[in-house]
Amino acid sequence: MRPYVDEDLCITCGMCEAECPADPNVFEMEDVAVVANPDACIECEACVEVCPTDAIELK
Ligand code: SF4
Ligand code: SF4
Image (cartoon, rainbow, N blue to C red; front, side):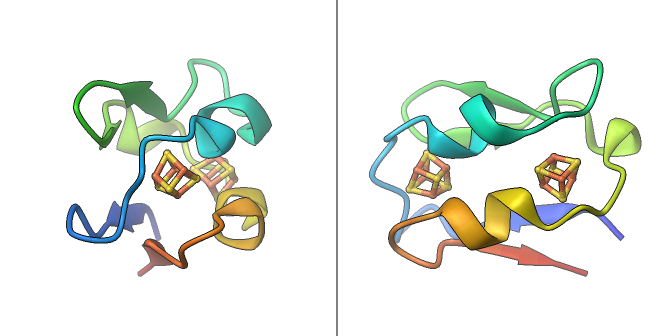
């Protein structure tokens, strides 16, 4: 699995990037959160839990 960000819901708060424990970080902040390194995801679901707008789905 890897995260997908709904760009219509993302408010670019940066919480997903701040909480992601993966190395390299799965996320990069641009106009919205971008899944820059999907292969690094360890499927911990921290991003899903922290996102205030439920913009992230793991699949
Ligand atoms: S599930 Fe965990 S490792 Fe994967 S992107 Fe979200 S916070 Fe990072
Ligand atoms: S936590 Fe959610 S709203 Fe915040 S930057 Fe990440 S995807 Fe966007």
